[in-house]
Length: 503
Image (tube, rainbow, N blue to C red; front, side):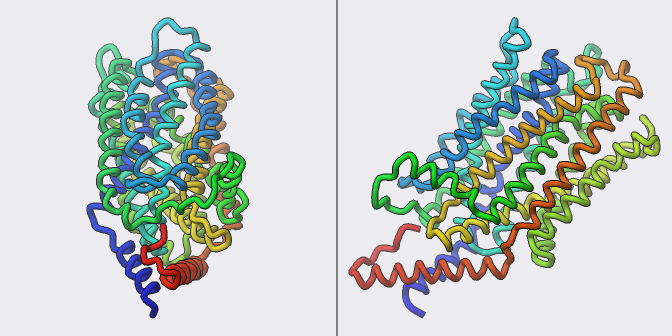
């Protein structure tokens, strides 16, 4: 074995054995994404629609329109993090810079100005939601792009994403449960705690603080790995704006990425729809109080704890693609079963002692299946980076993960728009008391939601049939890239250079 090849093997070994502190810090950062997702996906529509009184169509449209901002900002963030050269590497400058703005914009989203018309409130919601999304993208895209740079191992990537998803779920559902138990407790004036305006002020401050902490822990905890991560190549010529745009949209020429992208569009639209309507079902269909809803949010944390070790196990035996497809399709069928049975009059009635335990069990199993699908899909995206590099010679992790982030945020936003459409089509009223909700209102809401959710997940799963990368192909891609880099090192040595090339 040549000296250059040995050097590459040593680097790969060190990448595959990341220190525990680094892995935990990397995963812990996802709490910030989880808190933002919980707040914007589950609470923002409810807050402005039922607490403030803005029509659901205006709120959901304002949130969905932020996809226009994402469409511009996310590809640029990904591209910039690919080409940035600094003593902190190409990802960390953006991660550090995102902490304060994300926390700030998150907090003020829950302190809307008084005296605005519905349309003016819609503009306010759009502006603040867009600024928050851009800020969190400055963290999410570069930190996600670090995964294929921290390790090239096929299975290790899935385990690393498993840890990231667990912390993300902890941020989403742990913070939700804590908020319901502490900030949204029932009072004589507000027997439904999640409709209490004062609770949202404390909710905002706590969420902003947690977001700031999580991002900084990730940034500081992974800082030492910069020296082992692939760095931006030294530019040989000045790239034009057109060249940057070409690189940014090169992802959409890659077959494997397009399969993931298509799946993601429908998947995250369905997730956005579910997140925006879950509190409606809990509050108005099952008549649960804030304590019971808080308890049920823990089913997702249980789900993440189940999925974290099982996702790598399933992918090792059935492949990442097959695992992602099967878990998504059968998971959603299980997930909507309580709603379908309720519509048919076959589920436990309101107040039944088995209602909450059954919802918890179904939610945990359904959530574990969906989380397993999400983990494997993210790991599949990391494998796309090498597959693309084999044919182009460019390691554009930032481009791919920015396109994925854009897809995820826009589709989730579109899911909230779909939720507004479902609420509007079902004739569900604004600022309605649970006592005033009739059986006909419940039935209308259910019959509009259930087919929409199942349909979105099913169409999304069909896209994954076109994903071609297997473990065998990935290992071959890594071997080819190592051989290419080894040849470059050998050529550098022959030419009299002894410094290792930019990774």
